[in-house]
Image: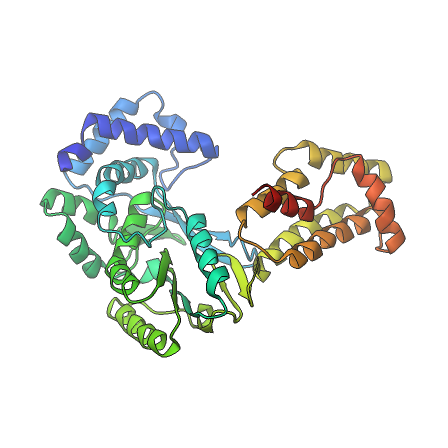
Amino acid sequence: MFEKIISDANLQAAYLKIVEQFAAEKKGSRYHGLDNLFLKDFDLDSCELIKLIRQELQTKTEISPALAIKIPKKNNPEKFREIFVYNLKERIKAQAIFQILLPVFEKHFSDRLFSYRPGKPPYLAAKYFCRRYRDSFTQDYLFVVDLENYSDLIDHDLLLSYLSEIFVEEEVISTLKLFIGNKVYRSGTIEKLKQGLVQGVPLIAMFSNLYLSDLDFKYQKKVPFYLRVGDDIAFFDRYPQKLEILKNNFVSDLQKKKLKVSESKQYFGPANGEFSFLGYSFFQGLISLEKKYLKRIVLEWKNILSKQKLSDNKKDLFIKKIMFNPRSNYNFQFEKIIKDKSQINNSEQIKKVSEEFFKIMTKFFYTRYSPRNRRLLEDRLRSFGLKSLYFFYKKFHYER
């Protein structure tokens, strides 16, 4: 298996995969790790690069530190999360290992695991979860949980023991070790992690999947419905006493793996109670947009108010420019929200959010909101072809 990893065909395929990803995400001219090298720097000597990668994998050369940077959280731009940026050479190594070992990993994953897997995207997990919820929220009890700092707490020795049960070839294990306990460059210093994983490449996602794989198989047999997406886990059952016992056992099993539950992000109780899971809010059969998500998109819409001092003509030109750009176009944004959150059935919430957008637009064009100004806005926006969020909600669910 190690020979397959370092073969010319596999290393070239890994290189081309990174090139393809960078082209699709437009990272080629701006993405770099700690070495400050861009993809274009390897364009003319990719054969030499592949040769060097093979040599380093054969000699088990320690991989370069990943660059730790902080970026705003999607649902709360005021808070930050840490991400790790690998050098391109290390990304190609990780990709080469990943694409050979993925079929082996897949054999050891539950069909109730939906994270970083081909054919099992998180949106499919949300679909299955919401289907169960809609069908049985009046009878079921529920335990949903989010693990606290999951990837940062993974124990290296335990992970290696799980990997050793799957891969018997010592060359493969020693190669995988390169990406366990590797170094990071953080705040001007280089650190070697004593626990946790350095995210940023698909191979690490496979490690995260595997770490809880035994619990997936154990608990999916004990309840009518079990599902995991990374560190987000859900149990449905009709019997609260039974579910409470399973909950306590599950928390105990997590502790043995040196993991802990996020107290603020767990829910145990009737399924018709109020809770959040996989980017949705749930209450008494209604599936809604999460409050944090709503706050973020409304703040984005309110940014337009910073242009309130423009003249009327310039305001029209400003909106025309937004609507002309396919990525900033409000119709595109609205349609994407509805498609990304396809399980929503709370039409009243969508109506309210939709009207919030038009209140913001009314204040933008007319300084203050009033019923008269809102009516004037209708005619003004018609010339831009701007639809409402609620229009796309109705269209999407009608077409489905």
